[in-house]
Length: 189
Ligand SMILES: [Zn+2]
Image 1 (cartoon, rainbow, N blue to C red):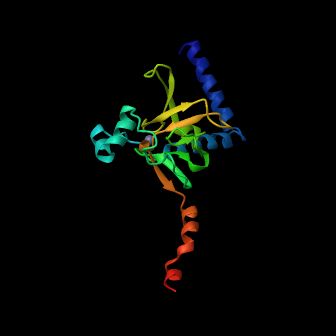
Image 2 (image 1 turned 90 degrees about the horizontal axis):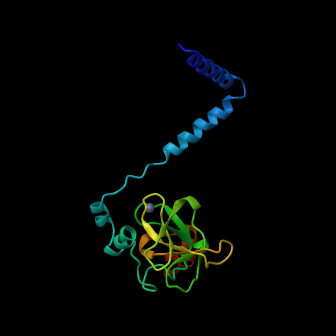
């Protein structure tokens, strides 16, 4: 054993001794828990092109896989005012909520911030005559739309999304309150 190896060995023993000292364990235990919970999140298994073609409509496929853009004002959610969450059409990751949706006048569903900052990811898009920031799902990489700097406060951002890249899940509590007014038994009386 060389002197250098001996030095590392001693160093290693010292580290173990410090870790074993009272007070060191809560920190270690916490680290272990956080690693565990991250691992418990079900991993996303990327789908093949064929699977996606079966799952999606041609428009949904074109938008999410080929960075297509659906027509303005002729899409499902541009004027949707219901309360709920907009999820990724491919992998179900929550992307936006009705709370941050606003009327942009563009004819596409527009939001000023995502559901969680980590749920979407960005790329530079140079396909146009100026550089745009492309937005995609951080889990399955489905193309969603673009983000611009002309949005309302507080973020100043305009997430210009394609309806075809998302599925809207209506807030059950909000839906229940609205339908409570027309209970079947009340109609029968
Ligand atoms: Zn996704």
